[in-house]
Structure formats: structure tokens, C-alpha cells
Image (cartoon, rainbow, N blue to C red; front, top):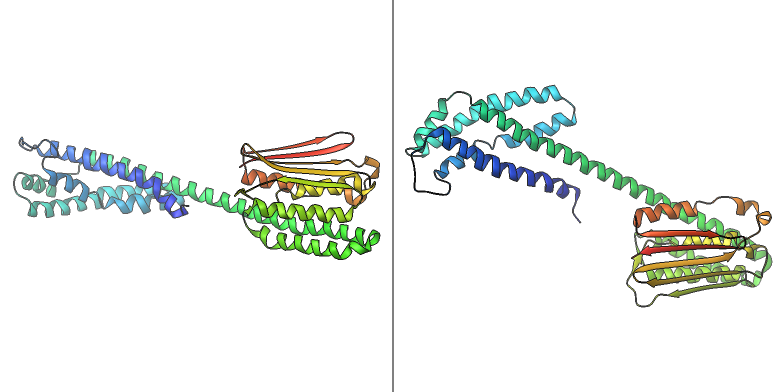
Length: 352
């Protein structure tokens, strides 16, 4: 994965290279050949190559202008300063630069190039080149400034999403612990013999949540192991309820964000009919089908007048789940919630 600095360099360097190739090495070179009135030559490709080298060398001073000066003025919104500095840099500094480099080339070359460079040493201002230099390299400076801003904007968006993700994960842990302690209290009142096993399962679940779930991704097999423990955990709470998890996951290397299905499972056990009537059911199924990971869970609904104050509270689970799905699987998931008079069905499909 490229770092932000690498991404920053990629696009501006392409545009910069094109400007140097087509504008400096070709246009300015051709312009100087035309201005120099050189005699005919037998060379078909790049006659008087030293003139092309001069075009490149005399333009090197502009690198500081478009890489640093233009973006700096734009970032500080000093537009009048930019106009003034552009005039000073290209007209004054540029003219001195061109005369000095022409003097050096004149001392190193022979006729007819020597005569051409000699005229450049003392020639008048060439407003055609001043104008084209300003336009070409201002465009490069603007592109660097715009691209840098875009990279910073995306970096801030990414950091914001990461912060949201950490907050969502942080919310999962106390939310699950609250529900688990509520269940522990209930089972200690009704089935004291199962309390020790219940505590061991709770410890195993909490170890997964505190340690493994801190990772960005976990293997699907690890997540299934957690889900099986969770269902066993709920069987101890509701021993007379038909609770079943079928997970047909074999030899897969798939990974996914940890605890992705936990809100759907918690919803089924928190609002299910089994909390008031033993003869009830919670059935869940997890499978991979044609590149889709499909989780389906169904439970009998509690009659509206039977909800306790605890059950009426709207938890963060589903909102948390939807935010995580948008973060990890944008346009690659389907979450369907179906409610009937007697049943509640949740189905989540994720494109692997």
C-alpha cells in the first residue's frame, strides 16, 4: 500500500514530466531554433541538440517556483503576492538566469550555436517565453496544490473513519458485557448449578472480545467458534428453548471484521419469546454460497405487552452494525429485517 507521500508525488510528477517533455524539450527548443535562424543541416532528429539542452537548463530555476512558491501562496490565499512574485521570479530572476546560462553555453560551444547564445546574453526581454513559462508552470503549481489538498482531505476522511471504527468497537465491549451480566444475574436466580459453566463460557467470550476482536480482521473459523460459544452460552440461560446454530463453513480462508454478527444474535436473544415462555426457538444458519457469506437468524417474537424496561431500550447494536457494514462492505452487503406477528427474521449477505 502506498504511503500518502507516494500518492502525493505520483500525479504531479506525471504532469510535471509532460510539461518538461512537450513544452520545454520540444516547444521551447523549436522556438529557439526558429529564433536562431540556424543554417540547414543534414540531421533529421534534434539538430543542434545543444539548444535543447540549453532550453532544459535555463528552465531549471522554475522548479522552486512551481513546487514550493505557488503552492505556498495558494495555501495561504495570498493571490496578489503570487502575482507579484510570479512577475519578479520569471521576469527579473528568469532574465538574469537565462543571460548567465547563455553566457556559459556561448563559452563552451562553437559556431553557429555560439553566435546564437551570444545574442541571448544581451537580447531584450522575450515576452512570448515569459508568458508561456508563466502559464505552463503556474498550471503545474496549481495541480500540485490541488492534488496535495485532495490527498490531505482523503487522509482526514480516512482518519475520521478509523476513529469512528475504534469508537464502534469500543461500544461493542461494554454493550456485550452489560447483556451478559444481565443474563448471569438471571441464571443465578433460576439455575445455580449452571452458573460456574456459564461464567467459564463468559470468560472465553470476553477473552475473544478483548483480544482477538481488537484486530481489523479475523478468520471466519475464529468468528464461528465465538458464535458457537455464544449459542452455548444462551442455551444455559434458556435450557428449555430450542436454540440451534448451523454453520456450514469448511476449509475457508475468508476473513471478516470481528463480532459482525453479534448485534443480530443479541437482538434475537434479548427480544425473543424465550425470555417469557420456555417453549420457543432461536435458529441461526451461516453458510457460503456463490461467493456470498450468508447469515440468517430467526426467533419467535415477544408480545408487545410483555416487554420489560430493559428490553424496550433501543440498543446501539443495529446502528453499530450498519455503520461497520458501510465501512467495510460499501455496496457489497444486504441486510434484511423481516417482522411478522410471531417471528423476527434477520438476514445478512456479504460479498466476499
